Amino acid sequence: MKGPQARTEQGEFCFKVKEGADGTPWVYAEPLRETMPALKNAFIGFGLPRGTTLPQAERIAKRMNENLVTMSMTIFDTHPLYNQV
Image (tube, rainbow, N blue to C red; front, side, top):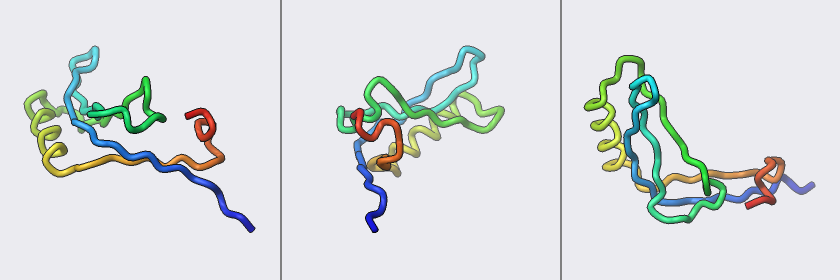
């Protein structure tokens, strides 16, 4: 019996801060190179605890940049994007 097929993409990212329309800061991952086709024309964002200030968000992004080397995403053959990218 054959198990599910999967494809894993991995890339290097820089974590940056943006402010939402309501002024709430959040962290997002900006790719350093186009190494993850599944994220072309997309991004991954991280919500922060309520009340996080912009300077706190900047410190969080800085710590993420200091401690995270790569991000990866695995897509299984049952996912709609599996054969599209």
